[in-house]
Length: 247
Image (cartoon, rainbow, N blue to C red; front, side, top):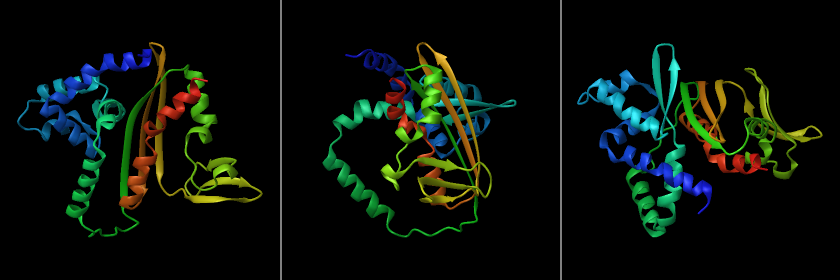
């Protein structure tokens, strides 16, 4: 057993304990919809006292599945999917029955149906993301990989080997595109959404903890908002970042 696996196994009891309570699972369901203050969560669980809600949130924070953001006097709770994904890959995925997965997919498709209504493009939406990555490397090395080697870990799906750089002009009206050289490339689109991102790197017990909070606000469809939520979450790229940072 590697040191990393032993470390992950040692941390598992906290997550098992966190998921054992139906109240804590209910809190995770609420946070899956979006971040919320402790008071707002307590308001949605009238069966529990505010103190009990705070205790349950404390267990979730200790297990790493909830990240706290301070906004003045308010404490905003965010769902952190990384430990849940690690737990899934460690226990569920290797034991999953692919035949059952196919039947469940058929069940979901039959229940949902095909009645999907398109939504107006100019609807103002807000997408919030909060998560933590733990990288076994120095803070400087992690920072360099995330900022200067993005093409090595962020998948490029249009220009492939032709891509020299990915450009995002940091202003409303700016362009986000792949630069292939000689004036060629692929345009993702123009910046019409205000995106506020807060990155914090701190060294802790031999690893670097990367805390990220992103807020995107602007005119977008539900599909576009889902795309921001999916591709803006760097946790899906954590193994690639870890591999590069360890070099």
